[in-house]
Image (tube, rainbow, N blue to C red; front, side):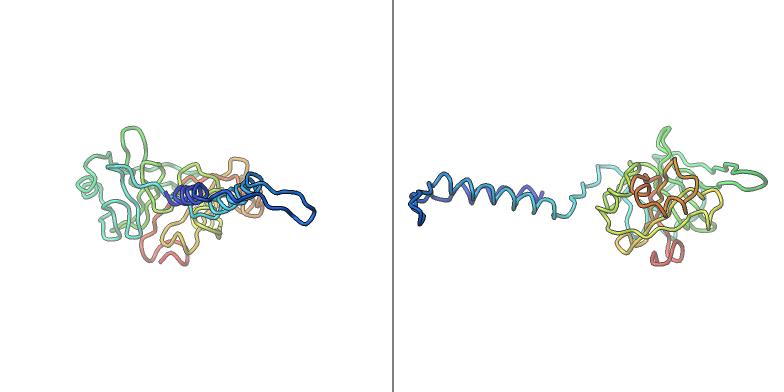
Length: 233
C-alpha cells in the first residue's frame, strides 16, 4: 500500500543518517547529536502524518467471485440486458431472481422491480422496461470502484468521492421522499442514496449539513446511459 511504502522510505533514510558531533551555539551551549536527531525525528514523523492524511484512499480489490460494478454495468448486466427473469437467470445462475411488487401507500402505487438475491440477502434491485434502466446495489457483496459501502455515512463517502450534489429523490419517485439522491463527476454513471431515520423528508435532510453528514448509504445506483440525474450519461 502506498502510504506504508512512504513510511518505510522515511524510516530507512533516518536510519542511514550519521550522528553529527556536538556543536556549540553562540552562547557556548553544546547541541548533542542525540538532541539534533530528536528534532529530525519529530520533523519526519510530522511529515509522515501529513503524507498519510493527504494520501488517496486505498480501495480494496474485489473478493473472488464477487459481482463487480463498473461504468458499463454490474457483473454481466449492462444497458443491453433484457429486463426479463428468464434471461437474467441465465446470466446469474448462482442467484435467486424474481419479480417483486411492494404496495407503497394507497391506490396502485407500488415499488416494482426484479430482485436478485443470494440466499436470504437481497443484492440487487433492477428496474427497466424492455432493457435494464438502472440497478440498485443494496448489499456489500457487490464491489464498486469507489470503495463506498452500504451503511457508510455521507461524510465518509465524500472523503472517497469528493463533494456531492444532492436532490430530493421523492421528486421522481413518491415513496422516496425521505431519500437524498447524490452524485458528482467522480461517480460518473452512479448515484448514491442517503437516508437518515430522523429526517422525514429529503429536503429537510439536504438543508441540514450536520444531519446530512450522518445520513447513511442505503443504495448505490448504476444508471444506464440516458437515465439518471444530469451528468450520469
